[in-house]
Amino acid sequence: MKILVINSGSSSLKFQVIDSDTEQVLVKGLCERIGIDGVFTYKTDKVSIKEPVAMENHTQAVNTLLEALVDQEKGIIHDFSQIDVIGHRLVHGGEKFTGSVVVTDEVIQAMTECNDLAPLHNPANLVGVDACRKLMPDTLMVGVFDTAFNQTMEPKAYLYGLPYRYYEKYKIRRYGFHGISHKYVSQRAAEFMGRDPGEVKTIVCHLGNGASISAVKYGKVIDNSMGFTPLEGLVMGTRCGDVDPGALEFLAKKENLDFPQIMAILNQESGVLGISKNFSSDFRELKDAEIKYNEKAALAREIFAYKVAKYVGSYAAAMNGVDNIVFTAGVGENDSDIRQEICNYLEFLGITIDELKNREQGEAVKISEGTSKVNVLVIRTNEELEIAREAAEVARGVRGGV
Ligand code: ADP
Image (cartoon, rainbow, N blue to C red):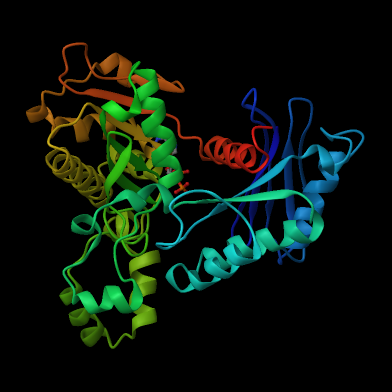
């Protein structure tokens, strides 16, 4: 099956076409600056294009990519009927969605009800769905949620210490995010080690600009460091992670700030950017600065690593043990120094790292020594492939094994 994978944001739309039988990527691209001026990137094994294309809205962006797909020179299909399924990345499915679903009017309605929970992401995702439905009304669409894999968390993990009535009334609870990545990476880790995901305990450290950690016990998430929103948990690129709400009230009073202003500080001005006194949210730049004795850049990286190690330790306790610890996403896949620093805290788990292996690059690398009591792996995440797999699986179910 040919699956068109769409990841629609507020002003950009990433896409790939993946052959779900061979898992080969046929096209990869990006519509950027939608509603501003428009930049279109499109790559196959034969062509590589990056050009300005006016895109006033998401429908025009989807139109641009569809035209490219059937173009005589750069295209990969003759007509749209050759796209079997469209798989959409959808950020927040609340408690309603525990797995991937066919996108119907009811699903759109239910998702719209979740907009409140993810005001920056869900409406942008839905605009992408809407654009595809307009232009390819007969194509099966599947929604793959970032929250779904985390829905196996139990109340002891997902409830806050708040009055229960607020959970009943507004569904205020921890949802966890990056579920598509956590699912892909935990399963790939088990497969790489020759084990069944249903028999291992895995901690996945998804360390990118946005960062989260999950505890996956026998194939099911039992905890995830993100919460009601993707603000909770680790210190991130620009997001604060865990903070005492009392400090926020204090800050609001001192600086005469309202809630939207406080939230903007927590989302955009905090994390390693804020700690480094606005030096950078980019871990590469922080590393370069650390080498040149920038103390705040060094402190930001130190706090980041310490916090990751604390979560790993607590998740090892939550699962009463751990077989695989996996690093993934931009920082996790590329920053060997930070991996080493995190693992230094974890010697008590019997973890030892092979320094040479830790410097290797690859789709999947085991960086712990043979004698290490826990396997430490670096695995490249692949959310698009996971979406394509899920979309194909849902489509097979709908079509009765096609
Ligand atoms: P997101 O998808 O959340 O935007 P990514 O997973 O793309 O984030 O990760 C982006 C982060 O990865 C940036 O902070 C970037 O500096 C970091 N990164 C990418 N390559 C490297 C590298 N070679 N060394 C250290 N950090 C890196």
